[in-house]
Image (cartoon, rainbow, N blue to C red; front, side):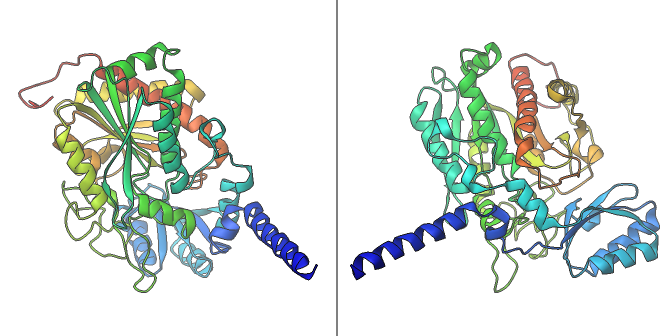
Length: 445
């Protein structure tokens, strides 16, 4: 009897532990309340003097710049969103008031916003494709399990492969989406989750695959696209960083897990491409969020994707990278003020995309060259793709414009992905039509 009671007690204790961990909000048990009291400031320097003062203030504080992602990119009349530790908030308030720089606090308690964003794990359906919930954010393990299942259940439309391994040895999985009757047809590359904290990216890549498969043979546009194009979908580019942001540090941006002994680890994967490497907007300091790495393509993730794109560049006609946040559609160049040779074709494609996006819910996106629409920065992946012969290279900055920042609630996954789906379909549909350009200036189109 004593043995039975002991056994029952141990089972009961196990159930209590499991249930208590399942029912607790993501933020409360993943991040140990580490963001309680942290605030996000929106600062608007009105002139050059404000810019200099703000750079000096932030340079003496340990802050997490959300937008822009580097202090060197701060300009007058452009908003600066900065995450500040609870111990530094009063000091920043005082300094900004002293310098008479315009600002407001748009997130007063970051921990509470994290918990609002992610809800409760117990409500999430993950056991099979039919129960998979596309309106919540998923862990790396859940996304990869979903990829395997999509490959197994839709072999006529989906193929799964790995382009390499991450720094920490995780496979870099890609889904090839499209009818297999014509293996050498034109292709579109879409990557998501380049920056670990931008969770809406992986959510969109999964949404795109789900919608494409479910609407095949019912939606004439999608049927045509899958019959005539291949889509290479990479739901999580930065697998190590994404997992770390999910389990340990919600606002981790870089590749690799943080080394707590030395505090600095990982690279900004979008600053690791060989186009104006480590130029404006990038940092050579390993502790900075925009650290460009010791040399171009130093990160195995970047190197693996670059190798795949080089190998298939004759077929890949569009490169699309999904980011957040700003509500923009950007194309080259980002590293200089100059007009790309096939500007009219790319500009038309961007216009059609944002028009299609707007038709869903009336959300407005700005579009244009990254250098003039956003800011001049070191060469990013879209510049690299364009320089390597992919004529249509785009970077989406999804919702929103700063009210939620990187904490886009799960309730907005559906509308964000629905409207972005329309934009991507518009870009892909344009590839099936001819667009005249100056072939002498751009011979590899």
